[in-house]
Amino acid sequence: MQVTRLNVERFDIFIASEDLQDGVDYYYGGTRAVPYSTSDESVLDELHRLQRDESGLKNALINVALAQGALSAIDQALFPENFLGSRVGGARCILRPSDPGAAHTISNTRGDDLEATLATVFSTIGDHLNQRDGRIKLTPDFGRYAGLADLLYRHTPHVLGIKCDVGGCGGKSSYSTTGVVAAFEALGLHESGLPITLIGSAGAMGSDLVGYVRESGHSDVAVCDLAYDRAEDAVPAPAGMTHLPSEQGRFTREALARNGTIIATTVGRELENSSWGAIPKDTALLLAHNLAVPPGATGIQLMRSLQAQGVKAYPGQVLTLGGALTSRLEWFWRQSRPGQPFNKPLAHQVVSSVISYLVRRIEAECKYASATPIDVMYRIASEDPRTSAPRLKERNL
Image (cartoon, rainbow, N blue to C red; front, side, top):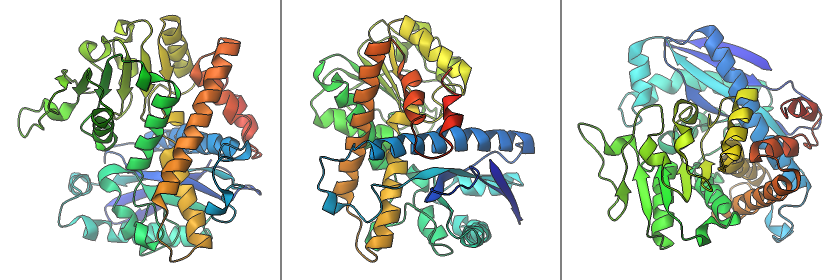
């Protein structure tokens, strides 16, 4: 991993990517902030994990799916030039505020001083990306921070997730939701008639999923979110859905104890801190978020334990790669079709097709080899045509 540290007033900026190689179009990753008290060592650990286990792994899966014809059923003339043969690696950016005031400012996306506070930060990041000749491209994390992509775009073209009328995808949240729905349907869970539990249902993806299950006519739906349980300014739970209690940093037993399907769109690290033994046999657990399981052998063993318990558990990387995939489509769209509004219906079709392909392949190989979805996911990633693929093979413990 290559790391560059940039210092501006009130912020430290850390930008990481895989070692630059020939045959890779660019390196892509999200941008997020950490608490101002985070140590340098912890920032570097987080950079490494996010770049390798999130951005790098998701793009490896996309590289494999594109190379193996996951989009062959779509009219090839619809795709921008070079997209289908693209190869992308992993990158990541972390911002660390230097004081509590700066941390508070960037936590409030509706604050009047947000843009002014980030002006120097984005100018500095933009200069760095330009100096790297576009080998690294970044995007703010989706949801309420999606609009920041347009602020960074003022300083560099090497930002993804910009507004649609200038060729961007307009943020990643809806595309990530499309991917989760595609997995849900590829697994046949939409036809099961069994209960559905949505954890994190008031967030950007969670609220989209609430809309999906409502429109699909599912009747036995339970929702769980910290926003419903706040002492003040609580968000009302969706009408007609069972409201389950929530807890910071873990899944409650009530949210895990229903059978059927559980879809979690939360912050991360909850499962490892929860009483996951309460999940009933034959439950499908879709961990549709980053940090779904601990990295490395610990997370793999947790997923194997769930399988031994009779729970089908899917890791977040394969479920939520829709944002990375749509951002890739955006880049090649902007290069070959400058000035044309982004084709959002095509992007949703691309995401649905790729994730359906990967889930069906994972299911087939799980049955053939009695493996877990996370084991097969790493095995598929090891087929990445990039030269960095052997490092992913080491993860298949």
